[in-house]
Each structure stands twice: as structure tokens, then as C-alpha cells.
Length: 247
Image 1: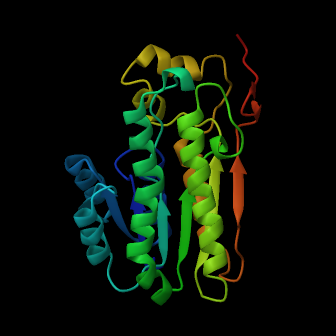
Image 2: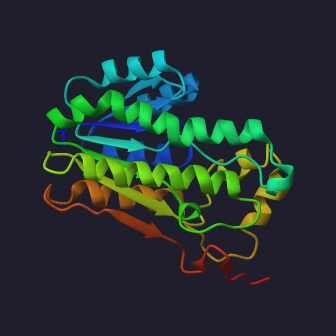
């Protein structure tokens, strides 16, 4: 397949980022996979014929190295690095966890976007930010994550305004319940039982491949078509607080 240009995916070592890298490689992109876990991201890059960059989006030197590896023209940036930590109420908030969520989901997203913006302009590119339905409505125990994802969503909204008239699209994809490799496991500090309970009784939660399909669709539309916001939930989830469970 003829190359569709360079696609950069952050948080590409697992979950939605991994699925996006796989799908975009199949679509014909030259995929640059960025993640902290070198061994994992290198193995995936070798599998799909992409290029691996060890990158912690909260570290300036790593972000600079990613921009250099991506090159002078970038067709697509998928800002996926981030995630949730904990589910404590505000009264018991782990402030270190809050800082980490803001650093990865918000500051890291801005740092990568800022570093790659010249290449995105040159490549008539598309910026996709993987936010969350947590950006749309609060839920108990979610203040830190909801706040971080809401901030990330407003970065997308602001960037779209600031780039109006330039050849760069900006899309915010907000997934609902996704049973990915590690999201809930990381959130609950490796507690498999708590992670499994999130999806208990839910028929067919979204998969990471479902979100990768959405990214592929958004990126593949004619360049004059911009999907500002795409909210994606499984059929069983009517809203963040309303999920049908069979048991």
C-alpha cells in the first residue's frame, strides 16, 4: 500500500495506542510509536513495520527526540498517552496521582502537540486527542480524571480555534467504557479483581480496536471534513452513570 504519510501515536505500547498503531500501519501510514516502555514499543514496531521511540511525554528531552524522529512532515498525530489513577473521593484525594494525571493527559499532550505542530502544518496534518466521556460529566471518585480529561478536551477546542484557516484538523474522540489491555488495571494499581469489576455483567464493552477504527475513519475522511468531537460508547452504556449489567 502506498504510504499515507507519517502517523505519530503516543502511549503506543498497550491499549488504545497499541491498537491505533496496528490499525494505522495496516492503513498504510509510516507509524512512529512513542511510549515509555522501550521493550514493548520496539517489539510492536518490529511487528507492524513501524519506528519506535522511547518517550515519556512529561519529559522535554523525550518529546524533542520524538519530534526529531517524526521528521519535517507529519500527517497524523494521535495523542493517546495518559490514563486514570485511583477512584478516591475529593476528601481523600491522592494529590500525587492528580499531578501525574494532569502531567500526562494535559501537559504531555500539549508538549507533544506543540513540538509537532510545525511538521503537522507542513504535512497538512490531523491532530486526534483521545479524551474520554469523563470530560463530559462528573462522577463520584472521578474528580481528578474528569478534570484532566476536561482540560485536554478544552485544549483540543482551543487549538481548533487557533488553527482556523490553516491546513490542520483537530478532533476529540471521547470513548466511554473500553475494556482495553491495562486502563483499569493501572487505575487500580494492579488490582485485577477491582479492574474486572468495572466490566462485570456488561455485554460487549468497547474494545481498543473499536477506538482505533474511529481514529482510522476520522483520519481517512477528505481533508476538508473535520470531526470536531466524537463520543463513542458501547450499546450497554447510555451515559457515564447508566450502564446495563446482566448480573
